[in-house]
Amino acid sequence: MSLKRRLLPAALLASLTVPFVAFGTLPAQAADDQITSYAAEATLTGDGILKVKETVDLTAGGDTFRRTLATRVRSDAEEDRTYAISNVSATVNGQPAENFENKAIDNGRELSLKASGQAKIVYSYDVDNVVADSTEGREVSWPIVQGYSASIPKAAVTVNVPFATWVTCFAGRVGSSMPCTTSQLAESAALEIEQNGIPAGGRLTFLTGLSDQATVQPNAEFKTRWSLGRAFTVDSTTLGLSVLLLGIGILAAAALWYFRGRDAGKTGEGAPERPVLDGADGPQFAAPDGIRPGQVGTVVDETADVVDITATLLDLAVRNYLTIVELHRESHFGKLDWELRRLNAGGPELLPYEKALLDAVFAEADTVTVSTLGHALRPRLGLVREQLYADVVTQGWFASRPDAVRNRWTTAGLVLLGAGALLTIVLAIVTKFGLVGFAVMLAGVALTLAGQVAPARTARGAAVLGRVAGLQRYLADETSADLPQSHRLEFASRCLPYAAVLGLTEKWALEIAATDDDDDPDAGIGWYSGPENWHLSNIGESLSNFVAAFGGTLSSARRLF
Image 1 (cartoon, rainbow, N blue to C red):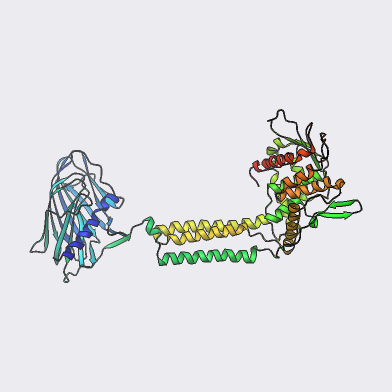
Image 2: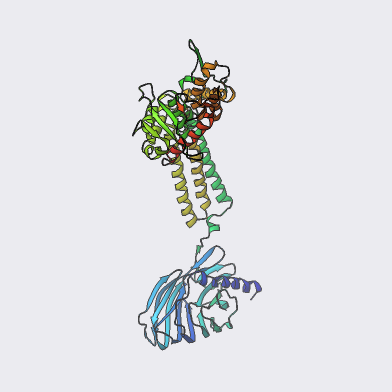
């Protein structure tokens, strides 16, 4: 036999030995079971069935004897070879085995029977899928000795295979490539194999080639073995398809945003919006288009959040619907707190969300402290937010509620993400295209992210946003220094809520503080007052603390914002 012909069967047999560790464990056996002799005879039929008869002389250590037969073994790096075992029977001392069981286990079958003392056990079974085509021609193989938890001192095997041309045999522990003690092709084309000393859990596997005259047809079956690397194979096909699907998903998300998620008009740079209206009584504050602080925040970031609600409360205070009283601290390091006092209920001049906020804050009494608001506000903040979203639609700045638009896009993205996750699992289990499912998941993420910027302003809303940008530039760059001294306090107070929502609280609180022109304690400025010996010059720190405390109260209310 050529060297090549010897090496190929050797490689195949070595690979067939590995799975007896990977595909099932040996049955539990009595510690003192002993096999004194072993003989097997197998015959290949014309339809490719190997009929096997094994004779085992046993000295049993218990009353039950078990062994296993593999139905799936490793073939190569990617595939396993599968066998079909049928017509299994067993006798003990010439009589049908008592309590004989033939049950399926992982990648094999476990045979158990009643045996005690000296026993001669004869197993009979048929094996299908033993004939395979290879580069060296047609071959027959089967690990005929396997699944015994007791060592075998000597095994004698005879295999009748018509038109056999060569034989190779390996035996030993799992993974061994040690040749059998003897293996030869007899004149009758029967394979004669002997092996001395097969350890417990060991095996003996034969492989024989067939001549061109053999009429038996190949029937070997193979199954692709799952592995994480194979499930997410990166090759030209899987990578190309994944990139294609991901590209389609991203383009679809971008197209949806382009046609449905963009503002109807452009926001121009514009000049700073000076919120001053000159009248008979002197200059007065006038917001662009009459927009209010809560509306400013929602138009800018398309979200009704904590800052918008806090700025609205400050605006209501400045407009004389409530007053904020900073309470005296018990010690220098004591906890700061404020008392909110409702001055009037308000009428139709209030927008629905402003009225909802007043009613939410003063639901239980006309005087409340900030430190106790958290629990009281929790069931009511949702309505304030709902009214604020509805208001920006009523004003014509958005065609649909921004939160509803985001929710629709986010839901669609999450559904696609979930479908991609399910597809990834299915494809990873049954194919090598797990990467394709992952690409669908990424497309879902892209759609979800696009949804966060999807709320589209109308042309009117875009125009208002431009004017808000002008107001922000004014508040950031200008001061009230060009106004008469008598109007600065009121003007700075009216600017403060807008400054709060646009991140400029400190600057305009200092504008208010700058109107304190003496060293005497101040009673307050109408909408905000401090404790004993409080100075208006301290209002910058006082307002910063108040905004942080009230905003924290809203945030802790089940994090609705």
